[in-house]
Length: 211
Image (cartoon, rainbow, N blue to C red; front, side, top):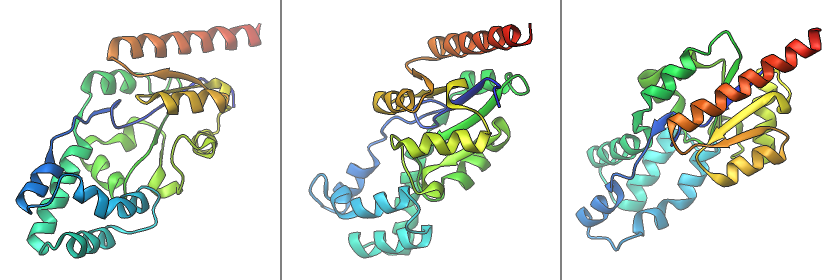
């Protein structure tokens, strides 16, 4: 298909996700040196981002590696998800909502097991866009070129018809290498302007093709 397409990242784009300091607070509570939590959990975090563990396995490993009881594990994971989910970027979400029906819309996100259920419940991204490609379900993370291919395949669009928006330069460059147009998210105003330009360009191209 040749329809214009916009594909967005979630964290740092559709969600604001500033660091909350939750990890350091847990290290202080458990009297652990700074960096211990991520050092002990690094392989679990990695496995969760590409779907090699389930949520219960994450909980079990948190308990075993940090010496937490069940209520503590629940509190630890609640803090993790509070930072992960952040707060919605309402202005951009409202703008994207207004695009529905005028172009193809998708999400491509590096994610963690459990993200779809929580983001669907809180933010209803499942009705904001047509397709959501999560790394923990795909088994591949950006900037792997296969992730961009998967998003285009899910939406049934060609890469060159897509504008990809992400807040990490490495992911933006990888999208361009995959044949997509791409924009580095820095603020809503610049991003909305870039999306509008992409869609206007697509409309002109389609008009030229019909004439």
